[in-house]
Picture 1: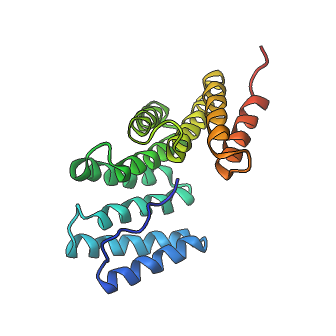
Picture 2 (picture 1 turned 60 degrees about the vertical axis):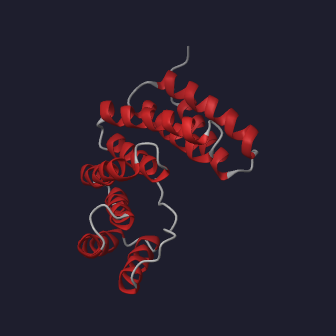
Length: 199
């Protein structure tokens, strides 16, 4: 789960100040305070910019991430779902922002043990990212890793291992063994293999 890059269109000064303050709280590990700051900011963004403005959608998504860090996964999924719904309407299902919100929604659903929906969202996001970004793009591989981990958590160790092995090979060829992404995929693959029944 990660955040989108700052928007190229500058925000009004006061909203920008509050957005930066909320992010600073999150980065410092003050997740509850960040959530409350983003909740207040969302009201202002929707009033001044509109509910479908990119900053309003991004603020909803960030609230979801703050809730996720507090392990409030159902509430997290609700925020990510609404950010994704708005993005689909405004930007379309294949837009980079929409797909990042979908990735975050899938993460939250998986952690809430809502496997059927979570796996469906992650599979769809992998498919769309492969189409729009390519199979070797870091975002595609990150969602593939998340899908693999979620499959393992859902009890499908074989499918998880196969997916993570494929993602690891692709990532290693593309980015090299020293890449943090490659190491992250490799670490998760190791966990799956160590905890899978021997055949």
